[in-house]
Length: 184
Image (cartoon, rainbow, N blue to C red; front, top):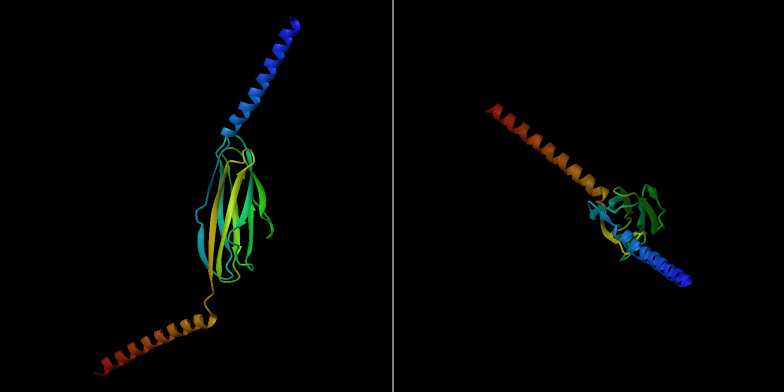
């Protein structure tokens, strides 16, 4: 009788451990959450102008979490463009497409995407954030950069010369009118 009672207590104890482990894991997962926001997601620049897109990961869960951050190009940006991203104050090299960043509960940290267009075109880069505590909790933002060719130097100088000539002509006409009015 005593061994039967011991076996029943052992099975009950084992079942309790399994229930606590199973439901405890679900409870912890329910407390994993974050927000991912960006003030601007689209820009247009001239060739050669480095653009920085900033975004923020805010841990809204009850405990600290580490996030996997992926840089995904779809469709690919022009091959001669330079890009890199930084997470948690650490910047990867231009070939990095994955980094990690830890954020305490109720804190936030910044993700920065730097893009340098070296030709005319459009680049679309998606930054995807995945919680390591619960990989089903994830979010992403797509950033779009359009580049146009720079205004040629001749056109800039041409515009400056036109303004100078226009101003000079205006002064000449004013002086001429003043002379004519004095002569009358």
